[in-house]
Structures are given as C-alpha cells and as structure tokens.
Length: 125
Image (tube, rainbow, N blue to C red; front, top):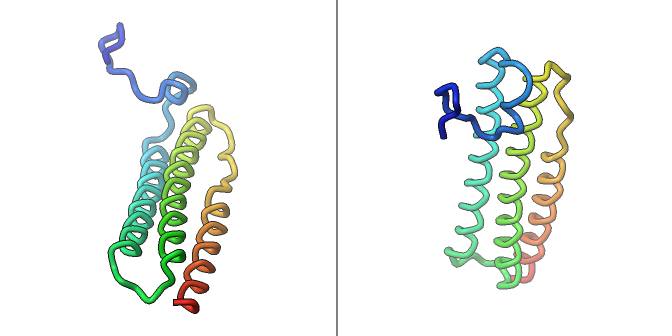
C-alpha cells in the first residue's frame, strides 16, 4: 500500500506513525528477539506433534493433554513475541524506557504444568 508521498506504509501504523526512527541496530535486535519467540513457538508445536505421532509409554489422557498444553504454550509464545516487539519498538521510537516483560514467566509456568502432566502420565502409563 503506497502513501501519498510515494513511500510504502509500514505495518503496524500504531507503531510506525509515531516518533522518530531509532538506531537501526536496536530495531534489528528487536526483530531478532521476535523471531526467537517464533522459533520457540515452532519448537513447541513440533513437540506437541511428536507427542501425538509417536507411541510413547504415556497414559492416553496425558499425551493428549500435554499436546494441547504445548499448543497453548506456542500460542502464548507468539503473542508474547508480538506484544514484546510492538511495545519495545514503540518505546524506541518515542525515546522512552523499554517496558518490562512478563510473557516469559507465563510461558515458564505453563511449561511447568505440562511437565507435571507428562510425569503423571508416565507413571500411569
């Protein structure tokens, strides 16, 4: 989508329409962090698929519950990555302090719960 000045609009406008361009190194580092969250989500989805695809010595309920939990963890990882990228990029453009981040704590708690499900399923399996 081209703007009236002939330049292409950048997505999301809620980030790029305000403030000044930060040092490109900081924006690129922010993008790399976002991509790391995406890679984490893909790994979690792969683990969920492996739980369903392979015949592991787990109780059936445990395997399915853990696969659903890992899929939910992947969704949380993607959402955390997006919110983190958005808030950091906006803070950089407005020359404000970078915001705190809580997405990792939520993901860690969810993964701990998934491990409990797997251990109980292994004992019962």
